[in-house]
Image (cartoon, rainbow over all chains, first blue to last red; front, side, top):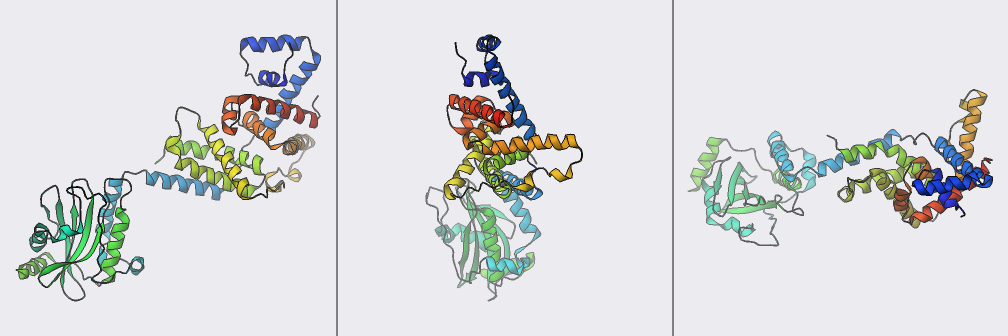
Length: 247
Length: 163
């Protein structure tokens, strides 16, 4: 039986099982030409392996680029909640009135501008800007001191962050409203004509994957506060006095 | 923070670059191919079966990146870049020089092989993939890999004067 070149190379590379290998060995024993061919195949493999023995050196720049890609990939894989926690601590470290001027360029939203953010699936308990006219929300804004959170039913929580006065010296409050699934909005309202006038609403991330990015929401908010001439947060006593004056 | 997938990818970069150089023979393009491979591998890592070897998987991504490049630019330079070749003048000693000449000659002969033969040589003789793995990387039946490999080995031996 003739031994094909394919079988011979497979034999040279140890890819044949016992019986096939035995057949090749028997054929080689009686065929000097076949034995020489086998020797060529073995030698060719050795020559190539030696010629390319050392893997190609990777320049530092390429290595650094790939490591940056790996780091990006790992950052993407962090759970979303970790980002939110990180964000909260970042904001405590750098409050909005200390946001550098560069951040203002990110978005300059004029006073009175309102970002209307609604959710496609207006499921029960889902957030809508209309919810801001909810008496329960207004009541919370009228009475709650900064840092406090109140449940207003259906798993909806309202927490007031800081109070401040805008460039027209009106009392403004920033608050966060979340629903049970973790989605929420952050909004800025200012007192005008005895009602809370909505200045800015930004969605702050949700449970689903293709939702808004919490980090950029907060950047937007920071940029707005800087651009709109928001004053420093009121002290607890000033805030209490201001809220007292509403009623 | 590190993970197995990322560590394996980084450890295999020199091998990827060596294979890339054998395909495109240009250092800058080889770097691009390696970077594209890393990007695609990370983006597709959820589709990698951790029970299989990562090396053939990465080599296949790189090879596909090279094919994509060829589709975009029909100008596949045939120049052999000198910066990646050993510097003959820097080596002392006749024996060392002879050994290096042999290595260089082997590289030159490899460069004369048809592309499809050279790549099976790289995958099987250099990166030591199994025939099955090489067939999967290239996307051909295992019999095709064996016939290309046999022809490449005989041609290379003849051109190197191995009898």
